[in-house]
Image 1 (cartoon, helix red, strand yellow):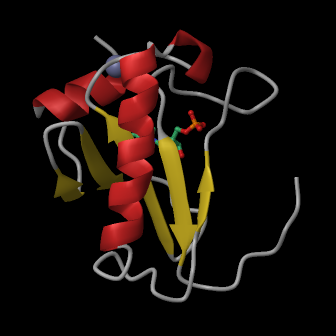
Image 2 (cartoon, rainbow, N blue to C red; image 1 turned 120 degrees about the horizontal axis):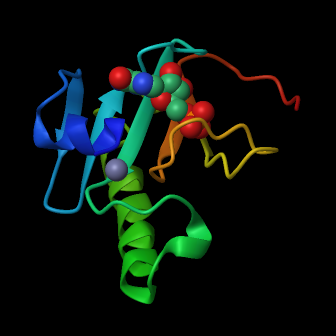
Length: 110
Ligand code: 5GP
Ligand code: ZN
């Protein structure tokens, strides 16, 4: 089982800030911004191209949920979402996840 599936199952501890039937949001273990969260679908698939139509729809519901709860997460001044995809994208965990970054003005660099 992958590391995020283990976190979802509660086998590996995490700092969970949100959970519903489709996803969890946890604090990233190595934050690169004052707020660095990971929104992780409960269903395992590695990348966007592996998502079924229903999983892709679930992703858009997750974004809608994020927009509704952003203030509760401390993101009232704005935030950035990032999905790293594959080798060039810097993806290290092969279970799709949305990075949520905020807590200060973020520079734009690759
Ligand atoms: P990726 O590089 O795949 O886009 O992002 C993976 C992220 O998962 C990294 O930012 C890394 O710090 C985070 N991460 C890896 N292992 C763990 C873990 O066990 N717990 C938590 N909370 N985050 C993790
Ligand atoms: Zn997984």
